Length: 83
Image 1: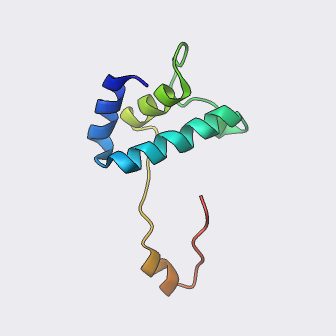
Image 2: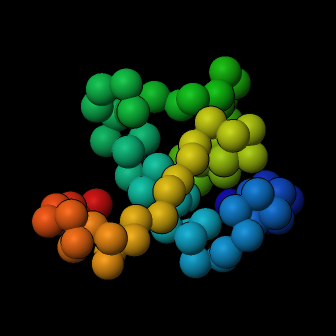
Image 3: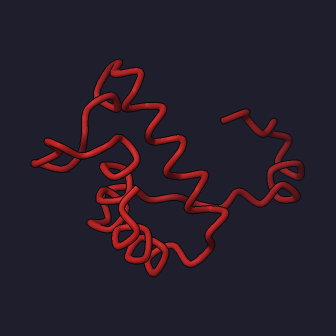
């Protein structure tokens, strides 16, 4: 992984644990290569590792996330889905 991309992505996300989870999940999607999520969201992904592609997507704002409040989900009677 490119350390400069890591620093820039961490500035965007703020939490290193969350960043690791986002990058690993996105790299898995790219590795699977199935459907629209299996392709990079950035125009020039040549000569980049899957992790660097994920980092660039985060930096450019092409990947987002949202927190799920477990207590609120339980109140509404919905089951929390597994990743």
